[in-house]
Image (cartoon, rainbow, N blue to C red):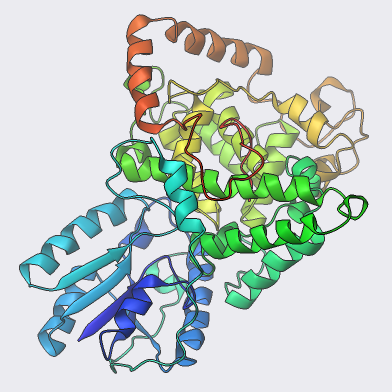
Length: 499
């Protein structure tokens, strides 16, 4: 028996393991739903609902090439053991996976099991992330080399190995309860392709300028992140589509291009940054649960401010922009990058909450949760990498800058729906009686307290020495190598990389 093991690569196009399986003779496409994985604190009802939709759509894609998706429910080693006893597995193909620590531990165990049972297990690189990378020198060139490879076309027909399939469990059967999500969670390839096309040709012209504000980001950002996370569409497909759009724009007279060239350059650069952050977790899995720079182990204590943490989770901090963003995220399952960074910054700096307390909850709210990006960014926005600029977002200023008229705040903070624009960002300063909590901390005092501690630590010579080693391992390179067709713009690592 030969098996194509699907993970976060739920498509039939641009799928190297599928090609390899198809060259081997009859094979079965299998996805394993692991109940224990879904009990992890960063996993959630909304993510599972989106996954279930993706799986149903993948089954339809596979049926078009003479296959079907076989669902198995259980722990991976037991599932493969049962299949091996019954059918004698020869080969298993899969994409490499860079997800949370639970899946990392599972993959190490199953590789050992495959080896012990003389099963050939072949893992293919995925989305430009490089396994067993010695250092970051030349990584960008490797990424571009992978992206410029032709997109692998869908297989026309293949020979199926028939295996019994379990039904996809309901979320409640995995002890996942509704979590407040209020939007459709349809994960089909058609939706992904429609989303990509509408961004490249209709919605994305003002992407560069409008990605930062939650008032405009829902339309002007690509909104592809959830489809990329689950592999409904590959990074290479998106890259090729963006490159094609750039070439089309270059053929137009300059006066007909509008703001599109800028937008496409910005977007193309962020595709690489997407993988740049995942590469950090691939190189150092401990980023998920320990400070990148260990000098910060003592500045915050896990579980120290439970009341503050709960208020932040509920969108009840008394800071309108913070609370609007959290409430929107709970309902929508998505918010733009600037606001994600602000939520994390506020929790870490103003509330002085250890990122290991706040990060799993935030992860569970993102339908597009990507551990490599999430935990790298959580540490960046908490000041614990030791190498990135300390950015303490002022939530009042962010509200004024990104939502000057209070449109977004009024939509999500109903208690302030009648507040005039000149009061909505500081409602506590005015006499109007709003049924809205007072600020949980003094913004200026909290910001100054965080700044004093963090900037003070960076003056220490031992801090600087450790930071140099972190730069060697994880920092982007100023001279990444010359790709075959380099983009016109190089993004700074401090810029937003919103998809």
